[in-house]
Amino acid sequence: MYSEKVMEHFNNPRNVGELNDADAIGETGSFKCGDTMKLYLKVKDDCIEDIKFQTYGCGAAIASSSMLTEMVKGKTIEEASKITNQDVANELGGLPPLKLHCSNLAADALQDALANYRSKQQS
Ligand code: FES
Image 1 (tube, rainbow, N blue to C red):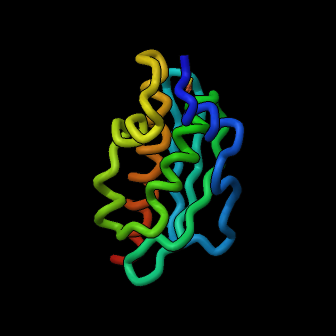
Image 2: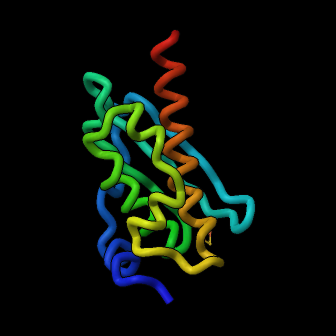
């Protein structure tokens, strides 16, 4: 029921952990299942140079988080802000309909981290 890419990211997730010197942190949780995700960004010259995540959730949530970090690393803040949960699901070769909400966790944590980054820039 899962694509090979989902299984590969679930079994070998990239960029797991936290960044002690993060420039921005995003957090989100799913009302549907109670799973949570925390995302850390290191930003230099408007570019996301490092990213780590901690996800307490299902296999699809972990695979989505891992995929998202690969998609975001090296992107500008503006490029990253355009990434949607559907983009993450597409990169994973699709998710079963019942698991589509799991990719929201990753996309929402990213948007929360970007909002956190922007608010720090303004203060
Ligand atoms: Fe909760 Fe997948 S079932 S994020």
